[in-house]
Image (tube, rainbow, N blue to C red; front, side):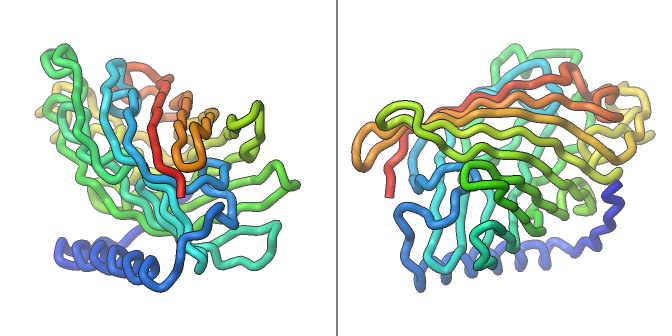
Length: 295
């Protein structure tokens, strides 16, 4: 499933691609004014646009038993021409149909080193503070495994509104993994933000992630060379269903210009990924909260 082959370029071309998207977003922000509130619901299910600073606690890598806590900036904004930025993803709304959303999407996939930490996760940039015990573990499954660099993924999104309160969401992104040939598709359903009390809104989502074999081999596989250097057994996972997930977001308007946003998500690894020797715990919970300025 999703047996997509991505022809990767050399490092110079990769840098050029990153510069292109950075310049494109900068140009878009210069010619279009931010909309307040956002016309289209943002990826978190709300119409809020904000920038701020927060913290996230999550598994140190997908399937790890230990957690890490990181400080991260948060950014969510949409311009009048349809371009939006949310965390480490950016896209553009092209549809004029109020029941349908679609357009191009780019995302920065986090890197992973032997410690399980990446320099970038779901935000503009982070300083990772991994527990000393996690760094000192002798039974670290990633010990001796090759690092996976951060990758710029490209693809598209498509959302359909069942009614004003519910929408089906989907996205396809290509370009992750060691050889930039990993592909992933995310399918979900989302309850858009609903007021639960004055100044308080909540949104809910559930979904699943499908990936190709190259994605799983990069993040959950062990080849012969890796087995020799890491003492993990050789493991070649296939493509298919990678995980199912469910989550909720709570936004608290502290005043006209300030808000607190909190997100909780539980993810369950499944399929061939679950049996990888790199997976210590198939179920991980991510909790994040941020204090932000509302546009």
